[in-house]
Image (cartoon, rainbow, N blue to C red; front, side, top):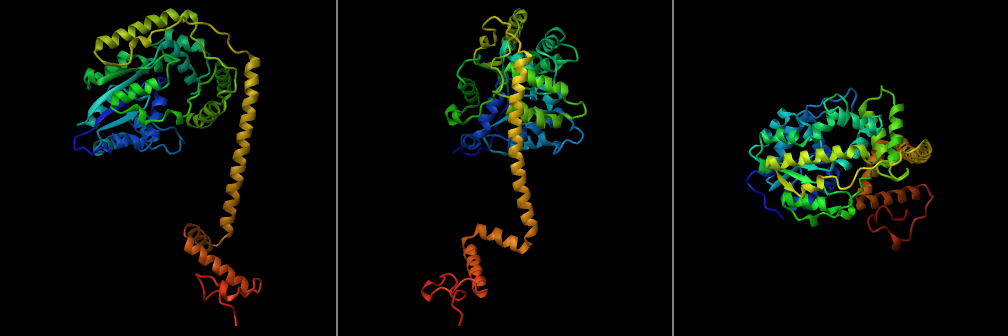
Length: 418
C-alpha cells in the first residue's frame, strides 16, 4: 500500500491521439483502479465519464439543445482540485481528444494543475493503419462519404473545412505538442510509439506502465474487453445508414443509438472480414509524411517511449476490392436480425419493469416498506412468517401446532388457543 505524500503528485496528462491505442489503455486503467491506488497512482474524476466531462469543459464545448445530463461547466477545475488533494504519488488523466485544445486550453490545463509536475503523453501511430481507422471513426460520427473522398479532404485539402481540419488538429504532431511545449519542458513531453499491427497486445501497455512507474503485471489483460473494429463491409453499411439518417436528429441522439448500439454492439463480426487498406497511390505520400513527423519529434527533444521507426510504413499500400452491394445487403440482413433480437430482449425487460411497477402501485406503502425491510433483515422476516401463521390460525385455515413445535421466536403468538 502506497503511503500518502505531502508533495504534489506528478500528473501524466495523456492527451491522445485518437485511434492510437487510447481506448485500450483507458480500459486497463479504469479496470484496475484499486491496484493503481495501491501503487500510489490516482485516477481523478471517479470514472472515465468524469474525465470526459472535464475534457469538454477544458475545450469549451457547449451542450447540444436537448442533450440530457449535459452540464460540465467547471468539471476541469474540480478534476484538478481532486488531483492536488489526493496525496498520491502520481495521477493519470487520459482522454484522446484533449490534444484538440487550443493554446489557451493548454495553458489553462497546466496552470490549474500547479504546483504539480505535469507530463504530456501523446500516442503516435503509423499513417497506413491510422488513416483507414480514422475514416472508420468518422463514419461512426455520421460522416457519409467514402474513403477516397475522405482521403482527398485530409491529404489534398488539409487546410479546408472538411475532414482534414479535424484530422490535422489532433495528428499534426509538431503543432499539437508545440501548444504544450510552451508550458512544459521538452523532456516532460513523451511520444508513445504505438506498436505496428501484429505486435503483442501487451507491448503498448508495458510502455505506458513503465512511463508512469508501475509494474505492468498489476493489470490482467485477459479480462480486457476487445475493442472490435469494423470490417470494410460493415463500415460501408454504416456509411449508407448515415446517408439515410435525417438531418433533424441531433448528434447526441445519433451517438446514443447509431454509434453506441449499431456500430459498437451489433455490426462487429457480422460482415465479410477484411481491413480497409490505404490505396497504393497514397503510399509514397504516407512514407514522406511519416519521415517528416519523425524528424520533427527528434529535433524537438521530446522523450520517445518505444521506437520511432514503428511510425514508418512497413509494407507497400494496396488496393483491395471494395465490398459490393450483395455483401452489404447480406450484412444488413444479419444486422436486422441482431437488432430484432435486441428489441425482443428490451421488450421483455420493459414488461418485467411494468409488472413490478404495477405491483408496487397496488401495494400499500406501509406493507411495501415492511416487505423491503424484511428482505434485508432475517429477524424481521421470521417475525413476518410468525404473523402470517397467526393470521391463518385465526381464520381457521391452519391448525395450531403441537406445543413441542412452538415457534422459538414467538412462543406467545404461536400458543394454541384455549
